[in-house]
Image (cartoon, rainbow, N blue to C red):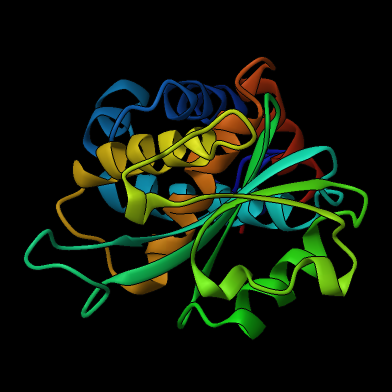
Length: 221
């Protein structure tokens, strides 16, 4: 018989157990640890994790455009074998300094792809910081009057005018965190990546309360 639960539709799980699940999820325990602490089986935990991550991803997509000092960069996730993007997942990221990050999986990194995302997510009055990749050529021409670049090919990651070490730092943290899963299917990788961004964006807020609020507004099925 289903238990009344404002976080999950037609659930046999009590609200108290779900709140325990949410608490350990926010503490960044893995699925096995969550199952042990919350007293749930792995299939149930996996289903709940997928639902919560889907709501997190939707929340990230709905956030307002970035403004101010914004760093942009692309990175490859996947096996460490070899160089380049072959066989890896390419991700493009935006980081508003001292605030939040946005990520999006892209098929490749030409100018049309990257600048399309920038135009949709970054206010034209912003100051853009990027590396020297040609995909960022022409940003001034489409309305971004301040664009500074770091030339990695010359061995520099920052200079007195520009730096992108904020987004580079996020890539490093995300890759370290995701490596513990020892490979993620492409259809779930995006959800895990959005979770990394969400936890960074709300690091100074109560993640637990935010997760409960999202699940009240749109209960899991």
